[in-house]
Image 1: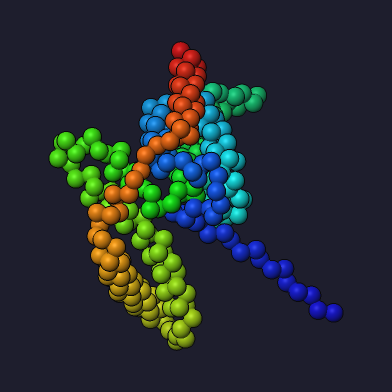
Image 2 (image 1 turned 60 degrees about the vertical axis):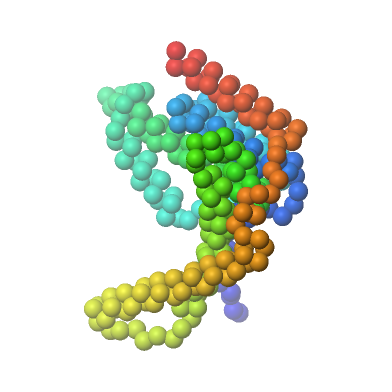
Length: 276
């Protein structure tokens, strides 16, 4: 009787800058509205990173994810080394002590360092979730016109906002494409037959040689992709067309901004009341 070994479930990679392919009220929002929401919440979290603010923003992100119908498959798998790193960070932070104190007989333990570590971890998760929501619900082509519209007042200061918007759009479009190219190059490199050196020095030299080959190939692929993108942009009318698309907020955008303002105001009031 033969037994088959259990198959290991493949890990889900991090998928960014690619919207979830179905419509929702969050998908239909203007890209500038999402950028304003991210900016406002980031400012709030910078000056008032308390538990009340984290909880209210987390509820807002979860509600937006529910409205956008983000599937669980879009969430990346957490690697085991990250759990180990978080556990190590929590243990070392707990050694710092601080208020509040708990007393176990003659032993006194300070939970201040551990609570600060947990608060920073929760804050990081909420901000990452906020950025992922924008990535999962926004087309990359909508970012540049939104940035150009939001930065229009800066043109009076001779700031090249259109050029910045074009550079941002090109970077966002090239980022996922280059990641896919690098994955293909790395996989092709691993499939090539190679002779494993027996000495430690030979193995180090082989690793360095593989690294140099991968870097040279990656630079070549990047230059080729840049040339192809430049030809495509020229054929479509130049870089000015990237930021010249009509981009304006609608009624739903004002509703979303109002909800965000209410949440930020409630978080600010809760932080001020708790800190008083």
